[in-house]
Image (tube, rainbow, N blue to C red; front, side, top):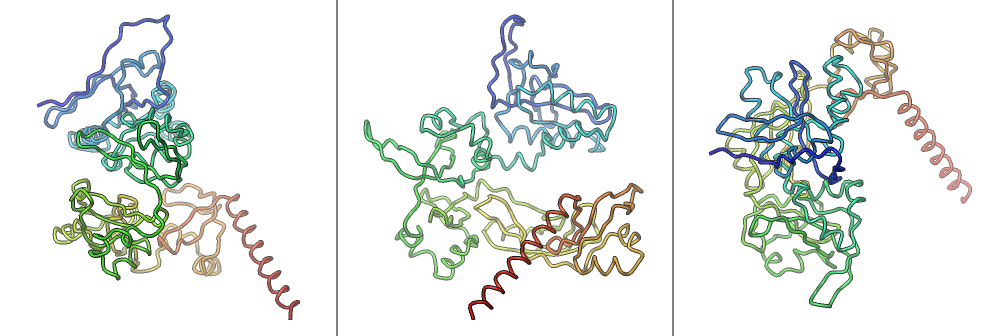
Length: 422
């Protein structure tokens, strides 16, 4: 059965102004081989076939364009568009863009048709390209959020868009800011307090806003059920900001991944059914046994990992689902050896600069040539945490030097103060 996203095609009324919701989003589709860019008017999926109704990417056409309100559907469409091509590099690309900016962003993307290195086109490409693996993590689309209710509670929704709070809610996270709100307890009765916010799905699948006030003591100490179920060792792990390490039931009886929000003293639950198993982490394969362990909340070791484009920079690490970020995260990476790309070794012919780099000093690489023969035109240093190379601009180097000088001056002043007080 086809799943189709229908949009109403309005009668053309050139003289009437087009009112556009400032938060509404639509889709652009780009064909890499030709560089052609069109707006999506409608999109449907029939088995493995994606059908796209295209339209001119103009604000005048905005009322009839596709409205983004189902990230899972778009992720599915992206995967099927890629599967339909023998070479995925030729697969049509989807871009999520503000409806009010559809024409401008389309024009920027079209510049890549003439020059693949066009700065404006690349900026638009990177800012708006839609990736299936990211869309699959979306829990609440903006189009379905109760924005009117949030405004009624006195929340500055526009500021929440600007500071990234809406993005936290979008991915099912609890807000970092704690808001002062007047909550209705009964008809004509309100209580003012500080609350963190979350979005959840109710029994009908609709997006619902909940507000949670911080607790005076940790929830796993105040709640009788949790107090009996969570061991003292697990309590210490939670207090340290780490996942529980196993599944536990929430108040609704669902088996969940669990962690502890130290800012609100409350438990954070993510139902197991909302988490998709992974088979790879940093290009390292996770076998079925380890996948099963991950889905029970455990931490597993993943071998033979590497960063894309650095296949010879091998490492292993521990992977576990973190309910606080709703992502599988890797920690405790161990690298097989210090990694310096071949092209960089070729540029470091004199031993002095190689020694400086190995000592994690900043090296002037402005005359270096990359593997493709282009001038590097920046400074470099080794990154201990990722075992890779950092590329620094002149301004970044100057800022690092300023911070280092400031730190030295503070240390000298502290030394003087201690010596003077003796």
